[in-house]
Structures are given as C-alpha cells and as structure tokens.
Length: 158
Image: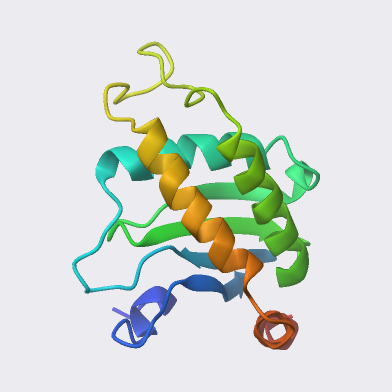
C-alpha cells in the first residue's frame, strides 16, 4: 500500500503550528498541531474531545461555515485536522482564530449531553480552554513569512 501523506512527514522535526497539508478533489486539509509529536506531552482524551466539540461548533457557525467540511482530532493526540473547500490558508487561519476565540467564551462544552454525545462523560472544559488559549497564542505569533509559506504550498497544489 502507498504511504498516506500524513505518514510521509518527519514527525521528529514537526513543531506545533498551522500547516497546509494536502489538496485532494478540491478539499484542503490543514494540520493543526497543538503538541510536538513523540515528546510525551499529549492532549488528554477528554481535552481533545472537548476541543473537537467546541471548535467544530464554533467554526461551523463562523464566517466561513459554508467552506468547512470537517474538524476532528488526530489519533496521536497532538492536534486536529481541518478540512475545507475554497479557503486558502490565510482565510482558514482567520476562521480558526475566530473559532478559538468563540470557544474560549463558551460556558459549557456544546453537545456534551448523553443524548448528544457517544462518550458524554469524557469532557474537560477547563483543560480544553487552557490548550485552546495556548494554541491561539501560537497562531497569533505566526509571522507573515510563515503564513506566506503555507499560502505558497496551497497555491502549488491547485
């Protein structure tokens, strides 16, 4: 079998950040890396689950809601994938920051009732907000050159 794109990345050199990954059949995949891989610091299952609910809700209600295909966790618990259509990296980044800010204001994890969630007991709102605040700070610190690099990779994939 062919190795999928995410397994072709050198995870030993991958740092937390915001990365354009692939463009397949018009769907862009972004790697939202919260933690450095293989360093022992991972998102807990409850935190990851809560961030999934919070960002998925906020981004699907945000300014680019019609361009959002999917937001969900990486199995390795180091981050998330964001799948979009017609949303270049700079715009996806703006939407992600908007969603993170909205999530930080949430008084509760959306969709966390037993009737709404398949693992409703596995949530951690304070932990999710702590990790989201750290990731938002990272996103705010990205330089124009770092964003331009992601834009260039996206344009090359078109």
